[in-house]
Length: 229
Length: 339
View 1 (cartoon, helix red, strand yellow):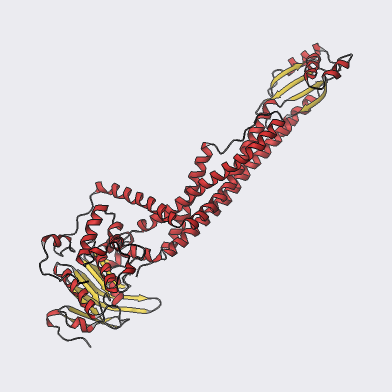
View 2 (tube, one colour):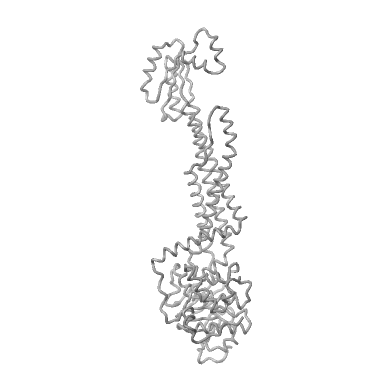
């Protein structure tokens, strides 16, 4: 599904954020991405979602070469990748329904299809009865679930989450991770950036550790039992 | 509120709604036959939702629309003014003529001979010989002159040739040439030319029309800037929304579309406002103009823009709105990147 081949990302302001990164994530995998802030976790996710382009090396996502993807094809790539952010990135002047519907509206779906799929997505995150509410009226956990519903509403094969539990208490964090686990069980590939090592340690998933733009540990699910230092 | 507990085997209905399993092949592409419908749907949604968006902020919208309306009303009103002056000039043109007063000693035979000599000259459209008797009769008919005419023992009036130059003899120099030729005739006593100042007047009207073009171009540029700037502010206000839309896979065209609609609406509404302002001015001036015309015993009604000019005004203003927002959107959307 995802293959980094000696990928580097350099910004004019902050220098090299990712250096010579090579890794592979298979379809249907659920992978945690950890490391200190500034280790390059967000950048790695942005590269996968083609919000940024690699400076060097080759990145393949779902058979698409991200470095060479024509500009006009970028939106269609992003429709195949659901993205979840720590700050939710919801539109505060629209209802929960309209927020979740956005990817479908953007893709030009008809009203009936949109309504049906939005309700299905809201049902999956347990927010069906909040569809008329505005995001500001919701708790942090609920807002994050609206963001998740928006990411899955287009039924993408790949979900990326950048610190999805960053602002949530441990109980809510576990619930969100449980939700991700359920998506993974129906075949969705997930890459979740998180520095919540205590939580990750209790979950049976592969964990990649980044340090200053380099991959320093790749602990596979079955063999990994202790939190990374 | 509790979340649903994840299950290993979701019920069939739920499985259909859940994110696609990785083994499922890529979603089949949207059939070509559905694309025009999608495209039209996007446009209708865009047009209506942007109009709704504009109506939710009535005051700023009205201010922008009025600014555009006033800017467009200025050249529009000047155009209407020249159009009316032109009509006035056309009326004069029909009556305007050269009066060739012959010397008193020229009798009817000599006058007739002169008419024959002048007939067939290409610069003259018509020649009309007015005898002293006819002229006296006309003078008697004029109010206030009847008594004076009665006092006369002999008819002091000469033969007069009423000449009308051809329309194509437009420029002042050739008219002047014709006047000199007529003045040099041995029978001529005096040449009086009404046509010259009418032509000069028309020249001024033409200058006015040119001024309309210059003013319209300058103000069109102003309208472009007003709309461009309004759209720039709109883009700034919606920056977060644009970022989110790009993140979920909106194409540039999709993001650009509502801004183009906003620009087109501003243009169209501004053009309409200009039309209302011009019509209002015409309505207010109609009364005074009618009474003024009545003093000259003329029947003169002000004309408005006319259907063609109205179509040009509305079409042009909409196009200006579209172009202004296009320029602004191309410049400012590129600067917004997700991430």
